[in-house]
Length: 436
Image (cartoon, rainbow, N blue to C red; front, side, top):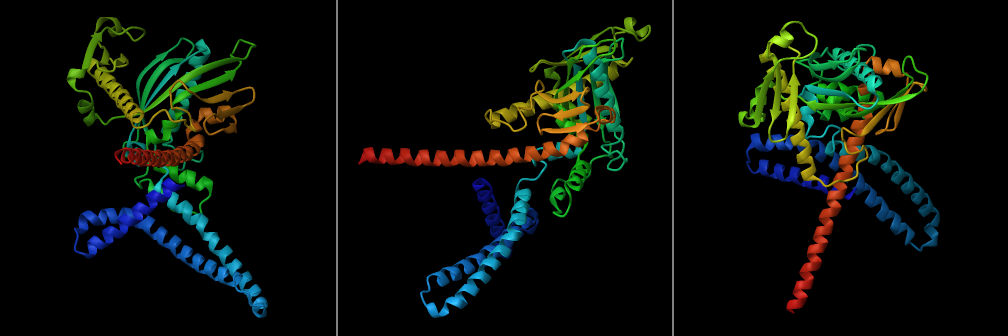
C-alpha cells in the first residue's frame, strides 16, 4: 500500500541520515538508540533494493533482445529470453516474504501505543448479567469461573505450558440465591508472572513458525490485560434452562480494563475530583453488616463513574478497592475519549469496541461457540467455557485483525493527506488566477 511504502521510505531515509550524522561525530548515545530501532527495516529495504536492481537489469536486457531485428541471432535470443524469464521468476520468490517482514516491522502485532498496557498491565474485569433474568446470572457466574480458571493458569494452554499462575482479587460480587452472579468485578494480577518481557517485536521474528507457534509466542508475551482485553463486549448464550423446555437467549456484558498500579491511583484521581460516601453494608454477612459503616461508595465527580464496595469488613479496605476500580474505569474512559478525538467514526472490521456490542454466541444445542468479530467457531462449549480458554482461542485472530485495521487506517490517513494536498494546490491556483 502507498501509505506503507511512504513510511518505509521515510524510515529508510532517516536511518541513512543518522548513519551520516554518526560518521560526522554525532551523539552516539542518542542517535544509536534510534538507529537500532531502524536497522531492521533498513536491512530489509537494502535486500529489496538489491533484488529490484537485478530485476531492472534483466528487464533492460529483455527489452534489448525484443528490439533486436537481427534474424541470425534469433535462436540465441530465444534461449537468452528463456533464461531471463527463469531468473525473473526466481527473483519474485523472496519478494513476498520480504514484503511481509517489512509490514510486520512497520506495523507490529501489538500496537506500540498500547504495548506497555498489553504486556505489563493487570486487568480489571467487570461482569454484569443482562437480559435473561436468572439464566443470565447463571451464565455470568460460569463466565466468571472460566476467567478465574484461566487466570490461575496464567494464560497457559491445556497442557499447562505457557504461563505462571496469576493472582485473582475479587473486588465485588453480587450473587443470586441460585448461585448466579448479577454483577462482579475482579482484578487479575501477574505480580511478576505471566506475560513475557520480550516486547512485541519478537512475535514476528521467525517466518518458519506455524500459525499455532506464532499464536503461542504472542500469548506468552501478554500480561493479564493484553490476554483478556478482547473479552470486552456482550456474550450471548442460547440454551434450554433447567426445569424448562423452551430455548432461551440470555446475555452477559463484560468490560476488561487496564488496572492502574497503586502508586498511580492518586495522580489519576485527584482528591478534588473524588467523592467518598460511607454507609452500612446490606445483605448477608453477620452482625457487622448492619451495625458498622463499612460500605463505601466512590464517585468520580467529572465523569459520574462510581463503584460501591462492601465485600470487606474494613471500611479502609473497601475504600481502597473502590478507588482501584474507579481509577481503572476513569483511565479507560479517558483512553476511549482520546481515541475518538484522534479518529472519526471509521468503520471497523471488528466492530466499534462498544461494550454493548455482541461479540460472541454460546450455542448449547449445537455445542458451538462463535466469535462474531473474527468469524471463528469452535465445538465443545463446556470445555472451552469451563477452562476459560475462549480468550486463548480467539485472541490471536483478533490481534491479527486489529493489526489489519491499523494498516487500513494508515492507508486512509495517507489518502486524506493526499486529498488535502490536492485541494490546497487547486485553491492556490485559483487565487493566483484571480490575481492575474
